[in-house]
Length: 281
Image (spheres, rainbow, N blue to C red):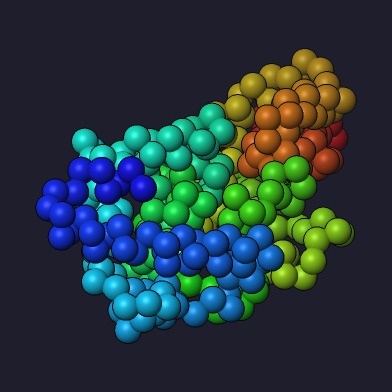
């Protein structure tokens, strides 16, 4: 553990070194459970050093691991383990938070909270690159059932499955809403986790805000396209934008929105604007 390199004092360093083996065993247990989608069966007490929770008597405490080891010797700038912290942050594709898919990564989130599971405080596969908002929203939540947990990007890759759908309200102004629509091959537990993840991080609200702002900014463009090219021309444009967005991310809020717009006869016949709403009648 690089985090131990700058600990001064033989006695202090010794108590951390004596904890390495039981912590490694705890991390292995976590990784095996995560790979089997069974984190909800883990017992928090078995990941704390007090009262032989890690199987042996240790001098380190929960605070030593969650604050001393993680915060002071890994997360703090200039600390001995900050290099590892930054490397994990850089693991997020394009620097985008994998929890929301929109905001930039600015911190690390403990998939299982460090205060409840201090032995996992510096476990790389328990540290997820995240934006500040997602990190604050999730807080110290711990799964109680197989479906009562957020998606773990290290062990559950749903990026290739189309599960995000957008719905269009036929009104002026046009309003969007988002929902999870699980693919047919998903298990009931995975479907529940996707819904839980969507609700926990308030993705419906976040995506609708982005989409409604986008619609406002492109309304004049779409009015002009409809007037010049008609229904087919506008629909063709919407499909191209959706395809481009989905090429980058199959669950892009933008791709889902433009796909829904292209599928809407109401929108493609100009009803989205009072300027064009009577043009096709």
